[in-house]
Length: 191
Image (cartoon, rainbow, N blue to C red; front, side, top):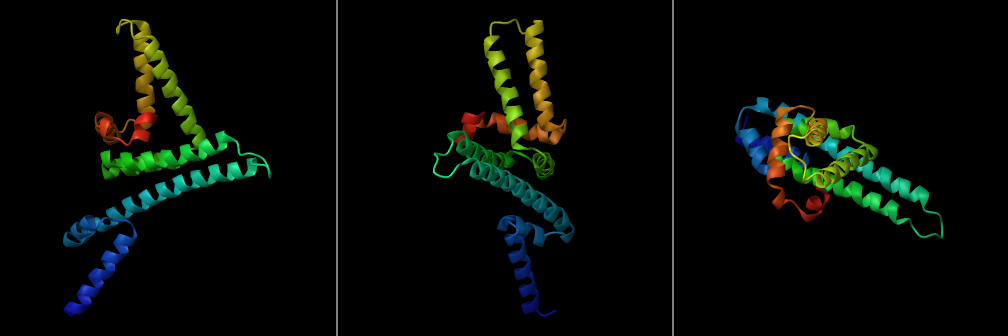
């Protein structure tokens, strides 16, 4: 194959992978190394796009709910608009936090998030909020007391429900939590 044709083929590969959202640095390493890595990269990128689609579906659903609830000539309910903002902020937070997880862990989280409805998010948020309140109310407790141990068990259960017991997801969560001072302010407030 002539050099010009090989160059054109490589350019087409670069354009296609860039279109899929793969960073140029990553594209270079994919194309310079073994082509057998490409299917894994494509699978990972597909999962990332599916996750993004899931978040967009949640945001669209929140907007549709707001549209149906706003009566003509009436003031919009602030709670409806707040829900839209929460859904969008949840998406932004998830995208930011991906930097702490390996690609396989991101894929596992994407699968979990695809099934995560805003109602489920609200339920989990309430469980964490209640746990934090209970911990604050129990700061004077002996850590070995039954009450403190029950709080620790609730904490572990919530962590387990997030990680699904997966060590890679758990490692990413630990990295993210230890770097929380670097999080955007909205994510810090949520935490």
